[in-house]
Structures are given as C-alpha cells and as structure tokens.
Length: 361
Image (cartoon, rainbow, N blue to C red; front, side, top):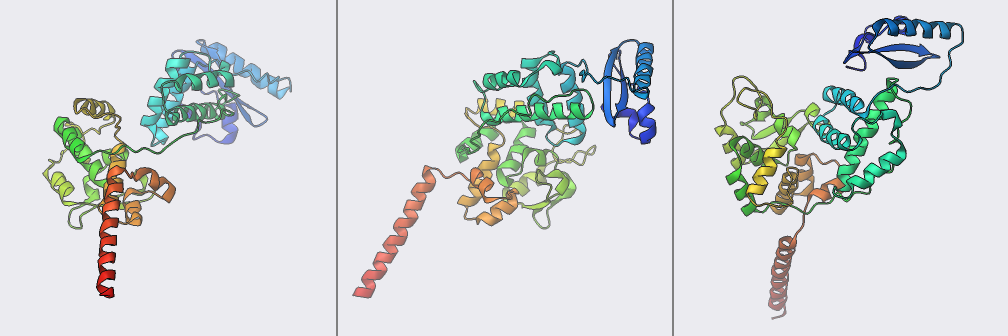
C-alpha cells in the first residue's frame, strides 16, 4: 500500500470527492478533505460500508455537521513502518540504514497501535537501546521513527508525532580505529572474492560503501587514472574525482566485466549487492579483527593519505569531506604518528645544532 497512489494525476476538485480505493489485506479506507485538511479513516473489510461512510462524511461536511474528533487511523506500528520503508526505498539513499533501524524498532514496539505510542514510551525505548548500543545508533533509529510519523501525519494517518520532542543522544563521533597493514592483509586473505575487491577499493580510495556498490565501469577513466563520482551517487550530492593508484588500477583491470550489468561490483546474475555487512563481519571475525566496521576503511584510507604526506585539502577533495571538523574525525593520529613526529623533530634539531656549531667555528 502506498501513500499517494491514484491521487497524483487528479485535479484538486476531483481529489476532494474521489474515493481512493486502496486495499491492504482486505482493509478499506476513505479519504476526504475538511477545511483544506486531508482526513483518512480505516473502515474495515466491507467496501460498501466504506462507500456509505464516505457519503455520510460528505453530507456532514456540506451541512456543517462534521465534528472533528481528531480520531487517528487504527494503524499498528508495524503497518506504519511498512508504509515508511516503501517510501524510503523510492526516495532515500539511506534506505538500507532505515531497514536496520526499523528492525530494531519493531523488536520493541511490534504491533502496538501507532497512535498510542507516547513520548514517555519513546524515552523508555531510548533508555533500553542505550544499554547495549552506541548513542549514534540510537539517534539513527529515533530519526527514522520520527520521519515515519511525520510522513504518516502528512498523509492523514496520524495526528501526533511522539518523537518530536525527544532529545537526541549526545554523540561522540570520533573513532580511532584504523586497520594496520598486517590486519589488512589478514582480512583480504579470509574474504570471499567479491568482498575482497570491494575492501581493496575502500582501502585505497576512502569511498563510502554506497559509492562503491553503485560504481559503474563508465565512471572509471584508466587513461587519466581517475574514478569520476556523479553528484547523484554521493552523500553530499556533489561530484568528485578519485585518483587511482597502481594497486587499485591493477585490481580493477583484473576484474571480469559482467555482460549483464555495467556495475563494477555485482552478483553473477548482474544484480547489485545490497548488503555486504554480514559477509564483512564474518571476515573480520575469521581474521580475528575486533572493533572494526566497514566504514572504518574510510577512516583508514584518510589516515594513510595523511601519513603519505598528502595535504589535508587534497585529502578532503578525494574523500568528499566538506568541513575541517568532519575531516578531523576521520584522520586518526596514534602513538606511531607521535613517535614519527619525535623522530622528525630530533632530525630537525640535530641538523639545526650542527649548523650552529659550524657557524660558531
């Protein structure tokens, strides 16, 4: 069941009198306007009853006898999330993230009536999830829930958004986890072929997972040693070039193109990879790599670029970071960096002191 359906091509006048015949598991709804505000009511399995109630509402409105009791549609939280995921799949780049959020939300709210969930209930959920999940994860789930309610309100399914006044958790977005060279080799050794090529690409480019999985052959320019990302395929909606180093170029040239798809990374039948999280987690476990997620490959790539002496503005251009504050979260400085800085300082001071001795002699 969709939220727009048959209404899109109708004039405003026709929309006010049109009976929207949407059926979901044998349930019929009526749709009408009062004072310019859209109303929906779930009637039940009887189509004739739905038509009768609709006529009654129109008469009440015409005779100014309609009483708006602000009665919300009898919809469960599960139904609400089903509606929302349908919308998300069509309009949001973060649909995969929404699926994970909805799974967590459903495990708690299930078939509770959506209109009976209160801010207090949401606060209880928030506290429950924070027992074993990070604040950033809980915030993504709350944001998903809030947006789902907002869409339902726009469509006249609900009246109140219980998440609207909930304060988000304070996040610490800084992660210091980067992959060592030895860990990287171990991870590649245990990864299945399709995952291995994706990991290599992330490790050498700092590209996001979605950017990699949607990469097409016509975006790779071997002549100029660049990958060209289109604006519609990036998180920031801005196009950007990615330089190809020799290791990545060699790997990409070795890939056999699938005649059924122009995607660089796809299944044997040409269909795209939608979820590589499970395979990645299994590979990390097999390689005995702890506390590491796929997005940390982006942190690793940015840190390696900085260690290679690439200036921060160039790294930001490659990675697509728009602000220095965000970029800093991805640039990890560990004890090895500090020791390397001390070594360079020793070299500088030693050279300076020798120069002073020569001048004084």
